[in-house]
Each structure stands twice: as C-alpha cells, then as structure tokens.
Length: 395
Ligand code: PHB
Image (cartoon, rainbow, N blue to C red; front, side):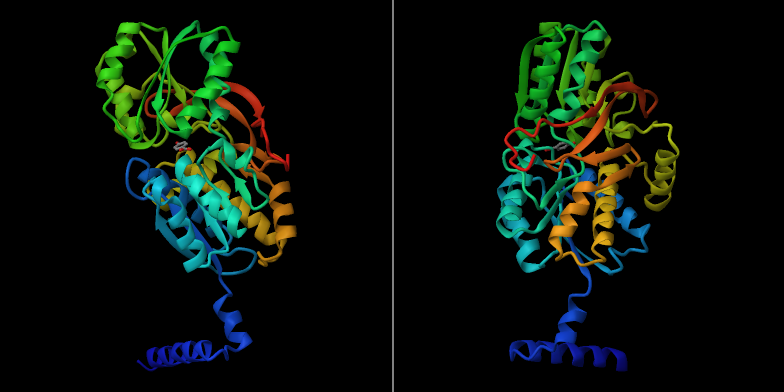
C-alpha cells in the first residue's frame, strides 16, 4: 500500500514537473533508461503464426543476454499489423511517434513493409526486417538505418530452377498470390528456370490472402506440366498443400516451392506435404551443433518446434545484441551502431552469414525435401547467394 502510494505520488510529481517544464535530468535519464523495442508483426490472419515465431526467436536471443541490450533493460511495444498494407504507415507511426521506440522490428508482409520503410526513411528510426523480402527495401530504396536479417523474395527461387531441371522437370506451371512477394519470387524462378533450360507453360495467381484454389488446380490438371512451382506461406500454404494433394495432382506432378511453402505448416499439412521439394536458407535437419542447440532450447522455451521464421527472429536479436554491445547500449551513437551492424557476422542456426553492403544477408540456399514432417536437407542448391542490390546507392 505504502509502496503503491509512493509510486503514484512520484509519477504524479513527474507529470507535474514535465508539464511545468521542470523535468529533472536524472528523472529523464531514469525514464529513458530502457531500450524501447517495437514489434510490428502479424498476430492475426494467415501470417499470425509467423509473427509469433519471429517474436519468440527475437526474445530468445535477448534472453541469452539476461534480457539486456548493451547492458540496458528492454521495454517492448507491440502492434498487430494484420498483414494489412493499407494500415502499414499508420501502424509504424504509432510505434515511432507514440511509443518512441529506438528500434522497430517488423514485419512479415512485403506490402506492409513498404509502409514501415516509408516511416523508417522519414524518421531515421532503426528498422530491422525479420522476414518481408520486398526487393526495394535493399535495392533502389535501400537506407543506412534499414537492415534485413531474412532474404529478398527472389533469393530462394534464384536457386530453384536448376534443381528442377536437373530432376528432369522441364515444363512447369507457376502459381502464387498476386502481390509483391509472389511477383518477386517469380522473378527469381523465371530467371533460374529459363536459364537452366526449363519452360514456364503458365503463370497463375489469386489475390492475397485468398485460398480458393479449386479452379486453378483444375486448370493445372488440364495443362499437365512436369512440375508446379509456387510461393505461398502460413495458413494459405497449409491449405494449398492439402488441396493439391486432395486433387490427386501429387501423383503425376512434382510440387516445388520457395521454401516458405513448407515452413511452420508440416503438422497442419500432414501427409500432403510429403515429398515436396523447396529451396530455402534454412532447414530443420541441418546437422550442426549450432542448429541442434537452437532447436532444443527453442522447443524447451516455447513448447513448439522452430521454423525459418523463428530463426530469422532469433538472428534479428543476435544482430541487435552485437550492435548494442558495440556501442555499450547507446543506440543514439548511430555511426558506430550501423558500422557494427554492417560488419556483423551472425552465427545463425542456418549457418554463418554476413550482411551485404545493401544490408541483406549473403547466405547459402539449401534444397530440402519434406520427409515425415521435417524439411530434410538434400544438398546446397547454391552457395553464398547475394541479392543483386540493383539501384542501391550504398552498395
Ligand atoms: C512477404 O510478403 O515478403 C513474405 C511473406 C511470407 C513469407 C515470405 C515473404 O513467408
């Protein structure tokens, strides 16, 4: 009781002092002592599980540091972006202007990312991208305060075409959601598949986040390609796998995907995912002490299996920890902070990776096959894949 009254009295005094312009420097110091981290992620909708996995991974990296960043306590702020691009700018502004975050961690959806990116460029807030692969963020619109720990949308599919043709699948249909991530994943697929000698017989699409696949699957059956390649993720990916299987297409057509297709959905898709081949910068089965330790500890902490999104969230935490330690928690020292982030080597469960000059990971892309609810590595589809960073003035 006494403690509570004391706290109330003190905060009332702070408010009084603030409104009369008499805020004491040590009180300002005490109030701003925590690093303010804002999560702008999807917590509802088709990408809800992706947002949760990213937050879990990020928190895990900080917990390994006693929950601190460069010796400072951390305070978290959260916004559910609903994967809704129309609210992207407004949601990012809430975190930056209302909550005054020092760093904005987000998001999953490429369209929403463009809203965050606009706010990051306008305000100079440190923006860490734990998933969304939209090309512009590390190409023409690259920025000194924006760092991505995930991929560009075409990075996984740039390694897909050769693997398909090598398996004798020379005639393919492409299918995706019609938005930036799907379009840009197609760009990598088209380039790698045609260069390897494959022919794309049809490009199919539906609006995000629709999952009415029946008419399109009927069209695929009539086209009789050797293979289908696609970009889907989250709840929509699980539904696509199930529908493709239920239509019996898996019997005659090999299904390939940008690896998100089989991330975080293996329980939900069950047997329908078996045998699906994908390219991705991570695999559950990477046989390294680093990955095994990460998987064990993540499962212990969150009572669920990690996926690529958990790894990306974790790596975002590792990156920020490295930067914050370098500047001893003074995130306002942007010059040294950004230099540390640029030079970081991330000892990730996916394997060690470095940051390109445009602030995107340079990383190996694995070829994986789903086997008994696991993404098993078959080999490295392409080593040290770097995004071309087209138009980035910093690169
Ligand atoms: C994207 O919109 O950039 C996106 C979304 C989900 C993924 C990958 C990329 O799994």
